[in-house]
Length: 135
Image (cartoon, rainbow, N blue to C red; front, side, top):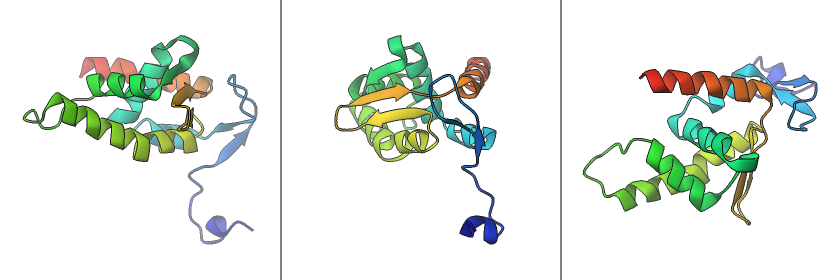
């Protein structure tokens, strides 16, 4: 028996059987998807990948796109410093979380980031983007 279920801990990564349009064998639970898009950096990442041809970007291009979209929290900071902070946050926090949720495929060795999400992720991203525009 799974230890997390034994302890009564909810399985955040619960997986539904089925096949997504991306070729994944199983789709991710709505809770996992919602958690993945709850952060501004991750939404900006998914937006950039959604707008890219073939849903793939080079890591450096993705950093530029996200840095342009995410607000600079401290306007006194230089643009280069803001971009470096985005680069570090993407590599160490946001891309691993999206990859763990199986929404993206991040190949650090080659620098390729590719959207592999299914229809649920795509629909949710569209809804979130509409909400971001109204803020």
